[in-house]
Image 1 (cartoon, rainbow, N blue to C red):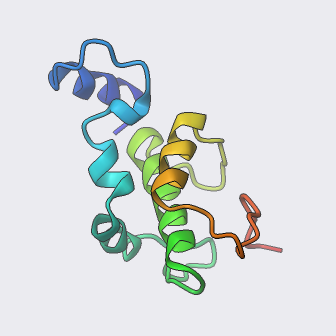
Image 2: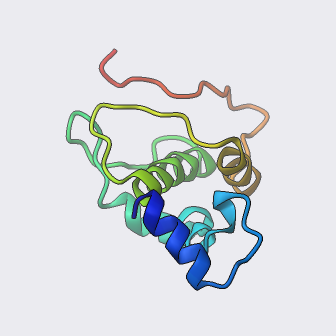
Length: 113
């Protein structure tokens, strides 16, 4: 789904005052539900073609899959191009899958390093 489709979906869901992508009818089920994210993780691969898998905390893993899913939902496949997500999307994802006190938040890390 890309930008025009997102707007059409919001309109079709009869959301008249949508001001944020998090109000999209697919945002919660596609970006915030644990089991949906675990299932979609199987379809994602890193630049080195490795499958996404949980190496550290569950919330960290779910956040990374959610960021990836959001990007795919809104912008489709970006290849090597990276774009920041809207702050409202980051906030909703981090509220659902919070950064633990002992976890050091690093932001995006290029795996080619």
